[in-house]
Amino acid sequence: MLAADISAATVVTVYLLPGLMNRLQPGFLQRLQPGTRIVSHAFTMTGWRPDSRETMRIAGPHPGQGDESSLYLWIVPAEVRGVWHASGTHASGTQIRIHQNFQEIELEGRLLGREIAASRASLRGREILWEANGLRFNGRLEGERIAGELVGPDRRQPLVLTRAR
Image 1 (tube, rainbow, N blue to C red):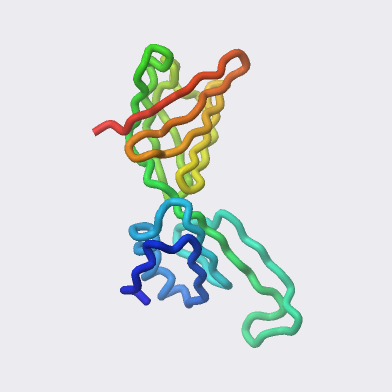
Image 2: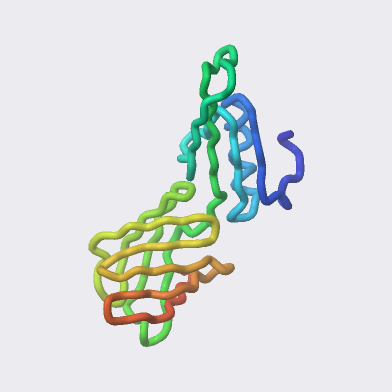
């Protein structure tokens, strides 16, 4: 199981004890493509918050589990951690540092020349969304670029960020 080639999987289902789940977790992130779904019955992965959780009643109590069963879903996130720059006159003064813990991200830096005051950000596979300084960005990681659209009350413009080296 630890050596299996899972790189082509789009969905991985597991029903394993936490010790084995923790041993598999680094391989999930290294070998699975962003957007791959991982579904687990009963057990979670250490430090990685599920994207979704469903609890359902089961027909009859199961020894050690009672009368409920929990399913957990994770969407493998893209690696977006680091510093990103925008090019072009329409996006001058944009440099964003993304901090990442699995699919949870935080932003800091400058957006269109203004310090990012407050932001909400999310990452789901390769799809990235954030709101900062009254603007909303919806984009997608494509190699070493994040391409998308920046939308505000009186503007709508493309924004392409390139990973700084």
